[in-house]
Image (cartoon, rainbow, N blue to C red; front, side, top):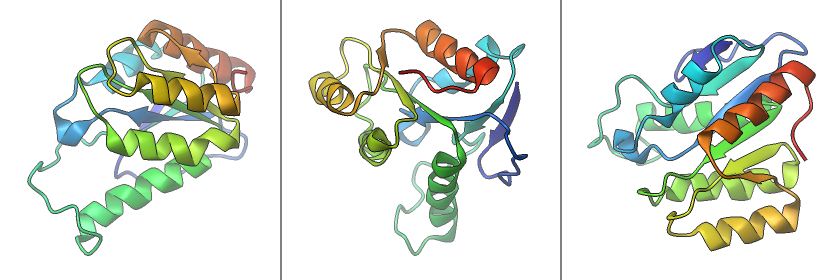
Length: 159
């Protein structure tokens, strides 16, 4: 599995199967579930687009006029558009408002899979959106990894 991490250039080959890892980061405070998925998928086909930077200054301005912040947001939007699969993870200890926004953007695209464990504060909202738009919802990171594996091997987003 190849990993492209923000802010590296999103250089994808034609027909390359890329999955964007959307989910709880909370300015670096959430559990690093992305590294867990990278390890779980290391021996499989495809590319992971990981928005979590190795270094992020939590006190950095989140204004659109901040060039580093803008670069991050634009990287994420471009990566979501380029990906054939968007894998969402809502950490139970997180509020993840940006992930909710991203789910809203992606729900109608029919290329998402969501892991929203019990305990996530807006799990009901996430479940209703997933049901409405036919987005599969799985229960664990292991299940999310399996959905990404299937996409990488077969090239078909889960339904």
